[in-house]
Each structure stands twice: as C-alpha cells, then as structure tokens.
Image (cartoon, one colour):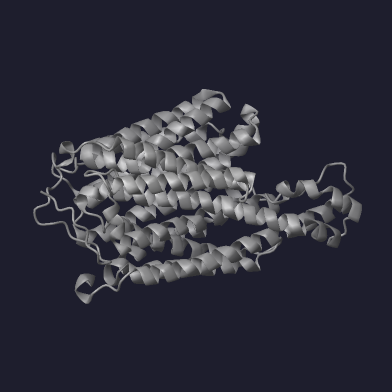
Length: 531
C-alpha cells in the first residue's frame, strides 16, 4: 500500500519500496514523456495563439471589446476551476483515462470554435476548452511522476518545461502566420491534427496509473464545489481588475469573496478523511515555495510578452509574423534553459536553479528600461534571451519542487496545484502590468504630447484616448496635418514607453523578491542527493 507521508526536506522524495507500479501495460517512461508532450504542446500553443487572433475575431464576428475579453476570460475561468479537480480525478480513477478525455475534449472544442459562426459560440466553446485543458494539464505531470524514478524525474520535468515554454513562445509566430495567410478559424483548427496525433500516440503507449486505494474513498464533492467557486471568484476579480479598477468594489468584493471561500475550503479539507486537496502537501517547504515562485514566473512571462507584442506591433509597426520572429531568441533560450535547469536542479537542488532563474528574469526586466520608441534590435534580443533562460530554468526547477515533492499517489493533484498557480500568475501578470501602464500613460500623456509639439488644447482633448495609447496606439486620424500627426505619434509613443518602464521596473523588483523567496524557502541539497 503506498505511503502518504510527505518528506519535509527540499529534495525530491523516492517512492516507498512498496508503492504500486502503474497497472496495465508495461510502461516506457520516455514514450510516456513523448505522448504527454503532444497534449501539453497543443494546450500551451493555443493559449498564446489566441491573443493574436482576438482582433480578427472581433472584426469577423462584429464582437465588442467586452466580448473579446470573455473569449479569453471564459477559458481562464474554466481552466482555473478544473485543474485540481482534473488531477484528483486522474489520481483516483486513472491518469491515462482523464488525460485522453482531456485531449479528445480539447480537440473537439477547438474545431467547434472555428465552426461556431458567432461570438457567443466562441465564448461557450472556449469555456469547454478550458475545462478539458483542466483535465489534461495536471495529468501530464501526474503520469510522469508515476513512471519516472526519482533520479530521472528532474530531467523528465526539464523536457516537459521545455515543451511548455517553447510552445508558449512560438504562439505569436504561428498565430501571425495563420492570421495573415489563412483565417482566424485556422488558429483553432490547427489543434485538430495535433490532437489526433496526441490521441493515437497516447492510446498506444501510455500506461494506466492511479492511487490503488482511491476507490475505497468517498469523493469530496463539497470540496470540489468550494474550490471551484473560490478560484472562480479570485480569477474573475483578477481578470476584471484592470477594467473595473483595482480599488473598485467589484474587484475587491470578488477577490475577497474568493479568498473567504478558499479559506473555508482549507478549513473543510483539514477536517475530512479523504480530501480533494490534502493540505498536508503544503507542509513541505519546497512544494509551497515552488508554488509561489511558479505563479511569479508566469506573472513575469505572460505579463512581459503581452506588452512586448504591443510594443513591437503598435509602436514599432511590425506585422504579427515580424514581431513573432523578433521574439525567437526567447523561444531558443527556453529550449536550452529547461533541460539546463533540470540538470542544475538534479546536481545542486532547486535552491540554485530557481533563484538563478529569477535573477535572469530581473535582468531581462531591468534591461527593458533602456528601450525607447526607436530602439535598435541590439537592445531587444539580450532581454529576450535572459527572459527565456530565466523562465525555462524556473519552470523546470519549480515543477520538480512541486510534483517531485508530492507522493506518487498525489501526483495529479500536485500537477493541478502547479498548473493553477501558473494560470493565476499569468492572469495577474497581464492585468496588473496593463494597469500600471494605463496609470502611467494617464499621468504623462498630456505632458508628452505638448512636449512633442501638439498644441495644448489639442493635447487636452486627447486625454480620453489614454486607453488606446496604453495599448501602443496613437490617436491619429487621416485628416490630421502631417506635422501634427507626427507629433501625436511621437508623444503617444513616449507616454506608452513611460508606462512600459514603470511596468518593467516593478517586474524587476518582484523578480528579485522571488529570488529571495526561493533562496530562503528551499534547503540546500545534501551531497548524497546530488548524484
């Protein structure tokens, strides 16, 4: 019978000698890794591709800005609410089963989005995508935790992290090519061949693995309801914070309600025999630290990529494909960093690789302080490289710290914890950094416009255009005189860069804080464990 004791050290724990191996077919760990990589690639690519498609969806379906927000928010809310549930279902009833259900459901929902023909249909099927992604994602790590021995689990996580980081970074390039040369529906149809390959390979090679005692336990339905409601409220408050204002009653009320529900969830989980989310997992310092740093890692990555793409397309005037190509150093650095981070983690423990990754991200953020409206590419690629190295290194180290610290029978739940932290961090990153940019643009726009030569009365009349300027769009019209038009473009661009500099300065400080948290929260690896 598998042990349920959590090792309180910061090192990955070995499975107990009497832990049951995966049932059914004989498993090949590396084939398992190959199979889950296809599903992971599909979900992560889709997450970043859709951001490129939103403007075309709006034009084709005559969708409002609020509609387009829900195209993104419906997915985020459904995903956040289902990740830990998906991991628990896999642990109890079979990780292979729920991974395959997730692959099939995500693929069908993607095709349905392209066929829907209305923005309401897109929103509904995006929510379905999120739910099935919540079944798929945590069971990728749960399957790896079940088939890889502890000595090799870190390297497996490194490859997993590499696939995740590269697919996310490739999204803008793939999306740009599809939008420019095909149509917006193709952004979703591209998941069909990937999903079919993932299904065929997974059905052929994946072993079944689950908690052998799961069927004896009553399923924690109240826990499912409490956790889903709590996460929905928190994530809804976060994604609406930029629109409503962070100090608004709606934002504060939603986040506070979510926090209270999650506190009630934690209290309830500690008082039942077979909880949905065993609170004992968080007694492990490495797992808790990894969860916090995972959220911060994707706060930085998704937040920075969001406004970097605005800068490249709206301020510099590059097409989506040209902008995506210029971020290739980020993708290539991620490709190198994930296995490198896994190797460093295996050799020295996450106490080295995790803070190092956060310091590299801090260097990337502070490097962006040198950017202006006409920066050469020589000033852009070094921060992209540092960001890719840092994100990939932290992702592999934190995945090992979270899932590698959990007992094998809780591998799916641990994967759900990591994926939930990732989603909440990413939602916070885009919302918070856009708010910082908007606030700074609002306070400096008038001064920058007049400084660029725009008459004071004209500049004052452009105050209402601050939301457009915060997205890098200059409020110009075809009938403007050429000299005035040039001045408005110059002043608006400078106001946007003021906002970017504020956002990257705050991000850099948060990265330094993350490095401190990682260094303090993780114990040094003993020499015996480094081999």
